[in-house]
Image 1 (tube, rainbow, N blue to C red):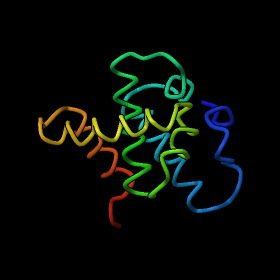
Image 2 (cartoon, rainbow, N blue to C red):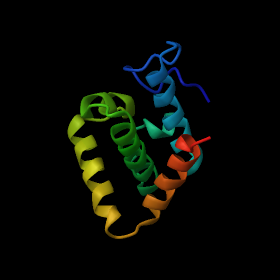
Image 3 (cartoon, one colour):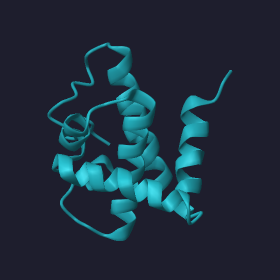
Image 4 (cartoon, one colour):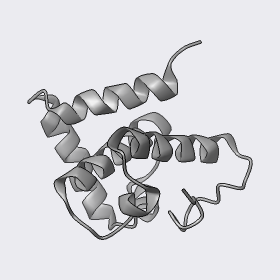
Length: 114
């Protein structure tokens, strides 16, 4: 899996903690949803890929407090799409959707206390 092409806004070779965490979140989402980074950032709009993007947007926003524009650049989307993704995540919180369980698994894997 190559990480060079997934975004214009993140240089993963830069040894900054937040960049490494960005990459870890993206890779964690890709592993959980069994997709590649290229699929995550592609223009294909299947439900499975959209749910992965919603999870990624939510984690980048809630855990790292990135702006909508930063997340949009990372996911190769428009900032208004990121706003939609974050609203959908909130909607899913009330329906106990499978997506919320997947997000919780990613959070547990990435942010568990030692």
